[in-house]
Amino acid sequence: MDEKSSPKSLLIVGAGGIGTTVVDLLVPALDRIQLSAQITLMDGDTVEASNLGHQNYTASDIGAFKVDALAGKWSNANGIQVRSVAENLRQFEQLKGYDLIVVCVDRPEPRRLVHSLDVPWIDLRCSGDGWMVFTSDSNPELVAQMTPDHEPMSCQVEGALDAGNLEFGFSIAGTFGAQWILQQLREKRAPLQSIGSLTYGSFEFPKVSSSSMEVNA
Image (cartoon, rainbow, N blue to C red; front, side):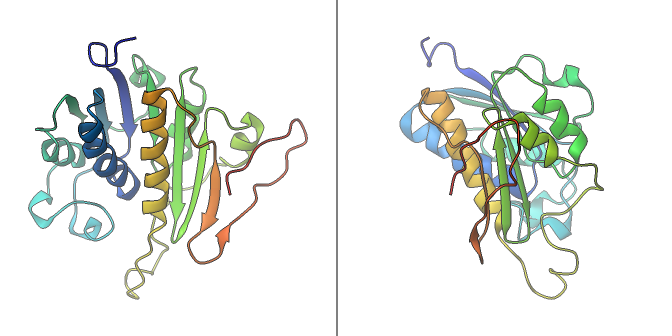
């Protein structure tokens, strides 16, 4: 396939701390190595003052849809089409037509929609200074086990920001995502999965009985 004439279509679901990190790393990298891509950003949220500091927005973005602000930021990147879809992922039909999917949201339901796809995907998560990453190459039983029902969760631990403790697990998760996308577009080996903490280092995933799995340390 000629990458320049037939760029792959990439969907990034979620434009918070993780999503903005992915985009802000990926777009200039693709521009630098002259690799084309069609990037769609999907998120129904607007920028709020409380997002500043751990999401890559500025005060001038407050009130705008996150995806519109982020797409506008990179509208002049060479050979990279960045479009915005200001809606939340709720239906499987919203995922059709993409070659690669990145999910970086704080709810399990959209994650499970992405996990059911036959195209390559990566699931990026964080909490405080910790991160968790799964891909379509991960053990499906492990992914299901680690995707229980839960209420939406911010990447910052409750009360941490009020205490002046902003943590950067989102940046690690986003970096894994940008690396995975770049390697997928280059058809090279990409990160498989990872879990860890900036304070305590890499962790091991729980064991699953059905098959063995590789863990990125």
